Amino acid sequence: MYTPQTFSERMMTVASKTATGEMSAISESSATGPVLQVPVSLRERKKLATRHELRRVTLRLVAERGFSNVTVEEIAEAANVSPRTFFNYFPSKEAALFGANPELAAATRDAIVHQSPGEPVVTVLGRVMAAQARMVAEEFEELGGDPLEWLGRMRAARVDPHVHAVHGAQMAAIERSLAEAIAQRLGTEIERDPYPGLLAAMATGVFRSSMSFWASSGGAVPIDRLVDLAFGALASGLPENCDLRYVTATVTASNVTDRKENP
Image 1 (cartoon, rainbow, N blue to C red):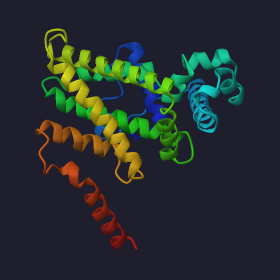
Image 2 (image 1 turned 60 degrees about the vertical axis):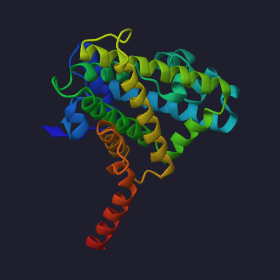
Image 3 (image 1 turned 90 degrees about the horizontal axis):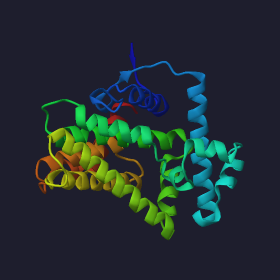
Image 4 (image 1 turned 45 degrees about the horizontal axis):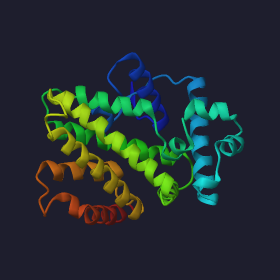
């Protein structure tokens, strides 16, 4: 039986299949439609609930006090867990702020390397990044309240010089990981072939600009749609009249049609 999954269920699938060496949940099916429903144990649900609570508390406290004025001990206390439990989920408060997840990163690399052999790498990369963007948006939704407000809090925290530096280092690590995965798929090496690094840099730029537009537009356009259109434009050589430039108008026209058909 195939049914849609929540972010939590999909992340559990990612962790499970990454651990067993199977294809990740960030696959062709998860990028374009429903994915296989897998059993979710009570223990896994509790772990996801704790992770969400730690992120909620971190984002709230940082927004209220500023990043430098919040400690791991204070985050743990507000989330009703011990500091030791905090470190079972995140290696640092920076990781809790950004939602760093090693299982998702590993699954992303795996999907880029192995998904749809023979297909152009830019097509596969776009599909994988669109699926990941949707998962990020769903995680914000599952934190409760307005997902755009949570994203806004995280972005506001980057004003802190330390947070800005840490985020820059994190993005550089993600970019290198993508470049290595692209190189592996293409049977090349990043030390002798500049293409994987160039495509990885473009991919992180697409992701960042799409998230920014998604937030500034109030979520009017689904984030995975933005990423998908951006990669389509990229694959076409970034023409000036690409569909990406008219995505807002398309969504507005669709909303008008829906209101007429469903008064």
